[in-house]
Image (cartoon, rainbow, N blue to C red; front, top):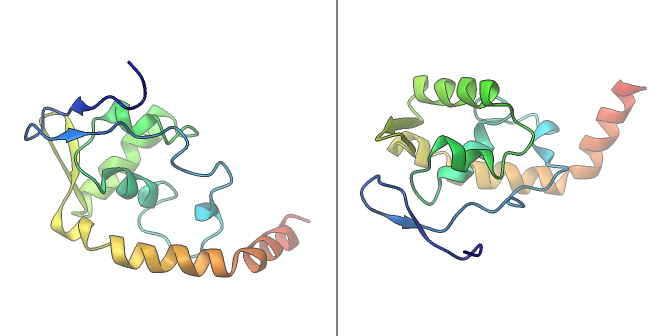
Length: 127
């Protein structure tokens, strides 16, 4: 089966396209942004859940650089903050978690607009 197959999550019987491995740029600006939701991975996890519930193994596909241990810690942190919940072996955004998407869009736009400045600031510290 190709990348266009649909997978039944088992959570509410919804059909979702699989998450793309290239969903996030390898040079993702989330490391550079001073504005975050949760930890380093929190915003990306929320983006993965934006279209519906996902299993742990599905989240690993676009989050290539994350270990199982760190993904588990990040998911637990988001769950403790009330942003996601877990049911039927799937993670899903809560209403509170869904309410972060619009502010995340604004933060992403701000990061793109200030990308060069963020890179310069990071390089000064690394020297």
